[in-house]
Length: 330
Ligand code: BTN
Image (tube, rainbow, N blue to C red):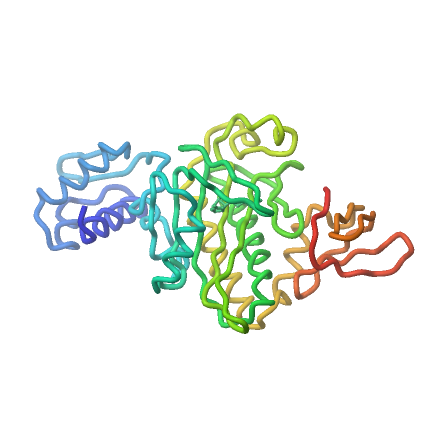
C-alpha cells in the first residue's frame, strides 16, 4: 500500500473512532478529495482486516469494534502525541525492535520513531538474557530518542520510560480495567507482585555525547503460559485482568505519557520533577529489600529514588545509602 493510502486509512479510522454516530461517505470524500469508490475501498479493507464497520444507506459509516492489531494504520489512528510514536515502523516479525531502532537511528530517523513488532525472533533482555515475545500475545516496541545529554544521564531515561509505562497502562481502564501497576527499581513493571514488563535501554555514544538512545519495552499482554523457570515470577495483563486485552491502545497511552514525562526530564536533565511520582509507584517503597550489588548483598529499607534515579535505602545500622546499580528483590 502506498504511503498516502496508509495515511488516509489511518485518518478515516481516527475520524470513525472520534465520531459521535455516523460519518457520511460524502464527508469522507470531501475531506480527502477522493471518490466514493475510493472511500468504499478503504472501508472494505478495514472490514477484511477485522474492523467491524457498519455501513447504513443515507447515514454513512460507524465503527463498532476493532481487532487486536498493532499495524501502522491502527497505531496512527490512536496516537495522540506530537512526536513520540508519530513515525511508526511495524513488523509482523523482526529479530529485535531495539536492533531495528539502533539501525534507524544511525540512518538519521527522526526522534520519536517507534518500531513495533508482533513477534521478535531474537528479543534481547537485560544482562545478556533473551526476551520471549510470541506472536499475537505481546507488545515489543522500541523508541528512538535524541536527547542533548551526556552519556551518564542516559540511564535515567529507563526510569522515565518505567514511569510512562506504569501510568500508560493504568490510563487504559477501558481495555484492562482498574489496575495497580508498580515499578520494581529500577525498571521492571510489576502487577500483583509479578513481572509484567521489561525495559532495555541501549545507547550509541561518542566519548562525551550521545548519538541516540533506544528504549525498548516488552509487555506480556495476552500470554497465558510462561517457561518453567520464570512461571513463578512473570505474568500477563490477560492473566491478571481475566480477559484478552487490546494492545494498540496501550501503546498509544504509553507514548502520550512518555512525551509528557520526557519533557519534564529534559527541562532539568534529571528526575527532580518525576522522582516523587516514581517513588509512589515503587513496589519496594517503605519495604525491606535485598540489594544484590556487584560486590555485596545486604538487606535495607527502601525509601524512594533521588533525582538521579538512585535508590535511597536505610541500612540496618541506620545509615542512608544511595544505590546506583544492581538489582533488588521484591
Ligand atoms: C528485561 O530483561 O527485563 C528487558 C526486556 C526488554 C525487552 C524488549 S522487547 C522490545 C525491545 N526489543 C528487544 O530486543 N528487547 C526490548
